[in-house]
Image (cartoon, rainbow, N blue to C red; front, side):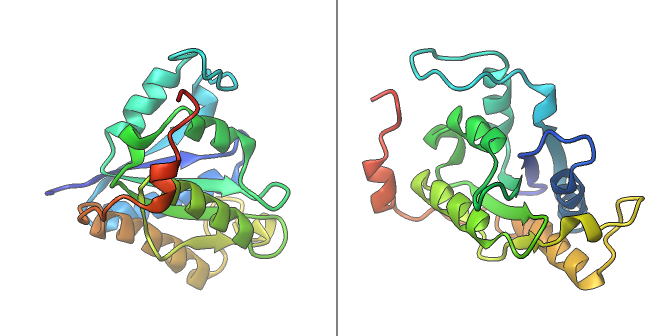
Length: 193
């Protein structure tokens, strides 16, 4: 793969989204590693709550195509009630094995308080159930309200480096050989079955 393409999907609709800021930094890491990247802003998509009785709703087909066309995906979320956002959950519900099986996925979470570990763990489980290959390195941005300057730059170089590494790893592992299907994926037949 000469120039892997990485899509960053952010699970926040806020105008000044710390998730978006952090993912933009991760995309800089993608470019540093020789890949191309794009941020998929869910504010630009009409995504009603998934109705499994319908094939496509709103802009869901457009979103699914963007994810399917990526060589790797970065998933970013604010931590809500100890997990990832409903906005991201709904977007992921429109996707499935065709979009994620064997695909490299990097995880990033931000929180207003301490480390958003449970949000990252929950996303890791979802990706594993979809047979994605989840990068072992993950990025957590605690106390996000204090992590960025007014211009969006990280205040802490170590934290910035951790986020940049996530983007670099997405490129590095974009063409990793897929493992055999997991137990979870064989049990997860999807809502339509």
